Image 1 (cartoon, rainbow, N blue to C red):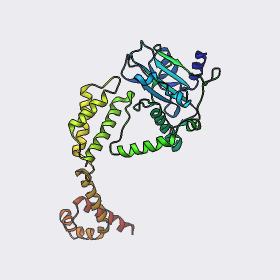
Image 2: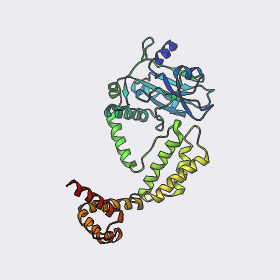
Image 3: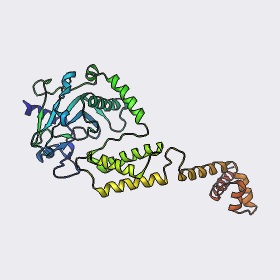
Image 4: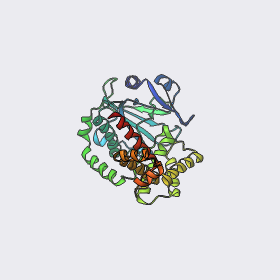
Amino acid sequence: MLENFLANIKTRLPQSVLAQDPATSSGSWRTSLPKAIAKDVERISFNSPIFINCITVDFDGAAALDEKWQDFDLPPTLSVSNRPDSRSGRPGRHDTYFLAAPVFVGAGARTKPVAFARFLRRALTAEFGGDRRYTNLLTKNPWHSKHFAKTPYLWSGDQGFLYEFDHFKEKIDLEKWSAIFRRDDAENRGRAVVELDESARNSSLFDAARSYAYGTAKSGDYSFAGLSDYIEQQNLLFIEPLGLGETRLIARSIDRFIATRYSGGSGLSDLQRQRQRKGADVRRARSKGPAILARLEAGVGWAQIGEEFEMTANAVKVAARRARHRARAD
């Protein structure tokens, strides 16, 4: 029966999947679903780049031994656990809830269904005690030789139980979690939490570190040492952490930007002030174009006109060019 059920699951997965096998490679690649199964890769993507087909909750350690979904009568469509002889050697489980109507997230997607699907994953994770760092991108391959797959009990024949959004609303107090998330997000505003992505370690670590640096710069607590420590701590969350040289490059890049181009919330940076002055000069020159043009025709130089009108020589040139254009048009 389980084999027939998994065969049915295949029909709901994208035929081109993202695959990852940390035991042999630290990266991820896109391949066909049959090849991913044949190569016995450890992780594959259940969702496609344009559709959310399912919501997965990740459990690690002791949490993987506790099926809290039973308290809410919300059995996952599919549950995949590590076998005792798996690579990690510790308990781990992915509970996946397949949606009856996949959510479109491509170009032109409706905002509300996408936002609700992401909120729902966050709420399920919090309610069931799952790992909040999990990104719903790669999940345990149910066909992997060291994974144990099962489907709890709400399914008939070879058809797994598919969930409508309303089913979750009946079982979980989503309003409670909405209020909690609003409060948490308000407290973390300025220090936004960026989820790490195992399949894009450099870019996701950079985004998380950059968000941390902006928040500490705004509050006046920024330091290069603090940023470096934060990056090291976040890097250890990856299954395969980045090398020391790569994390140092990320820290130096962000620190350089903070030092030279970011104001830390206390005003504009020097570059931003320079651009603001230039824009103000150009706007002021528009109204003084005819007078500037008259001074040029009288033989006065660019620099002297700039001093008279308190603007840069470049702004004087722009004003004169526009004044000539208007004169020809008239």
